[in-house]
Length: 519
Image (cartoon, rainbow, N blue to C red; front, side, top):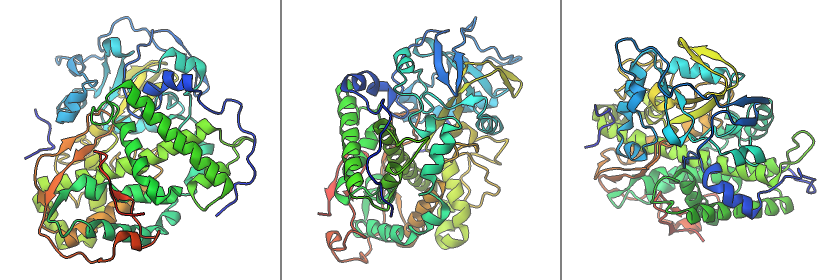
């Protein structure tokens, strides 16, 4: 039995002029793709201390060449917990042993420690307590998201100097640019817009469970948790039903760059990038010719500082929406189910009255899952936090997965409690300008799925060991075998006869297996 505890409708109009620097050339893709566009991919790129950064949040900063690689924090009688904290160890994360390392960092005062990366990077400050993490998020004027907001590794100098990969996604932008772009995309993610999707998503949920209830067993990831988030974001973006499984496979590779199940070589990385961006370009052309009431059309209609989005900008928006739209919620649903397996009393309580417990249960699922384990920032100025001085140019990693187990913020944090109140978790970020854009959508998807599982599979149980993603960025689960008492399907019509409003692309999962059921 596994345990989560630490082991000790709008017109695009005519195509407008875009920025001269509007797309990656093939030779640039070969140089950048292995490191620059894969979220959480940490293929190390050595950075020379003192090398100038051309721009970061509008401020020129340098990586500080510290006199010593040792942690400068005074730990009193305790040894520094960062001395042997290798958070580059992807196998450790796949084994789920990272909780013990992060707990040691968090519970050793002051909870902020300098981690030497050796030849893998410039070193960084590990933020592990909730209050400190929230402060970093709030002080976006001091802690920049620009450049590699999703990567532990340091971008190489060629990426900085070329400007190719600077500020291309919302995650990697600072104000005021981030503010303008977020307002643009936010139109499709307001609570009012999300509520308009509820009937559609309820129908998707019914179909997903109809396809597995008679079998008595399934892979929870492939057959249940992966489907609803994929269908939701694909519908919002106007991705055709027949293309959705391909998009899903590409996004798997985008967050699985360190897992041999998805990426085995540099050629795999390049091929995946070429296919994803090729599809993005194709979708652009189709929407310019035939506008629709979807996010893609909204992006192509945008006017940012007098210019349309460049092809690179559109590609990166497409990437981040696809990845964030299905990877994070899928893993929240999966890890939420695993938490219910571990804490059976909570499942019994939930099944007895889902509506009574739903609101607090959803928040506890997100806290427990913490699907994105860290985000990165860079200090633009000297700053003191928790009694620790962070120098301008220092790298900072905010470990959300540690902050969501902080006993200073949560009573008995290692207990999964669907009645937990208050529950001021940082599963959607720690506040500030980068708070999760899709939080309302994620909450709805979790609510719809668990209500139906409780109703139609009340005796669902673990039927084998989970298989975890090899990543220190996404807390992913690749496979989760489950069993339950078979029951009749409510829907006897073939999926492909239900029309586009009810069509589902297929049974898709981390392994890339697709059972096509729609034509």
